[in-house]
Length: 332
Ligand code: SF4
Image (tube, rainbow, N blue to C red):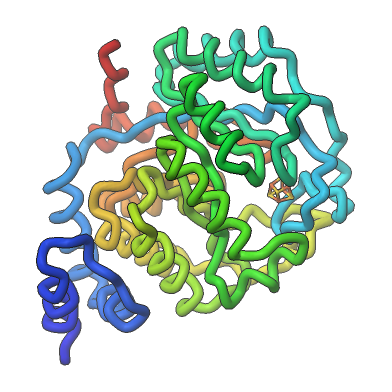
């Protein structure tokens, strides 16, 4: 069966329910001629979003370094010699002051990340105050704090948390090559708790970690086949960091990266696909192709947790040249 027929067969077999993707049906789309793939991705993008708007998120590390997990890509793991200094949880007032600056610079969503294995009860009051304070500024809130149980997720939801980020990182097959201190199933459990609490899920992964094409496809199949596809799907391009086990990983080829973005857009038509970490290593042309392929969210600001990110001036200049505008802030 050719790729077009195979895809229609997959979609038709679902009777209007979200299509269940298989490795084969996803790969058939991934392997389309590049122009056909991009045309399909852009068509689906236009059916679901304004093609000339990109959502801007700002990410703040509220607790940096010293993490007990051993994620092979991460400078914040206590297992690696990245030279990063660990810090304590940031004070609530400072987080809110930073969020206000981000809002005034145009960000509509504020993401707060802590380098933890899981959330501890002693920190809950401060986290609730952060969520409430950032919500009061009229911004959407997102947190990434490691593993959560259902009760913790419900309390964060009550405080007004809109999104919780918890990436599956890669395929189930490749997962153990990257992280040994928790399992792929642990990730899915936390995602279920987040979903059951009513918080929207932000979940994606990292490419360019030495995985195979099949792993990238399988990662997207897992995401698209969740009970509900994530509302936000960050696709990160590995930033190789000295002192981490993945510093020498073979970089992903740019066209292959764009194919991954296009496939994410096609498989999860209503999700925000975020062109996430790694933009410093991308040309303007590569980013433009990613937007054409359906990416419609970025992180703004000159740091991304601990890594460099293009500053606002560079992003504004690129947006001007492409005629892209940020998503408007939601009316409150
Ligand atoms: S990615 Fe998150 S969980 Fe993994 S080591 Fe870094 S901070 Fe810890």
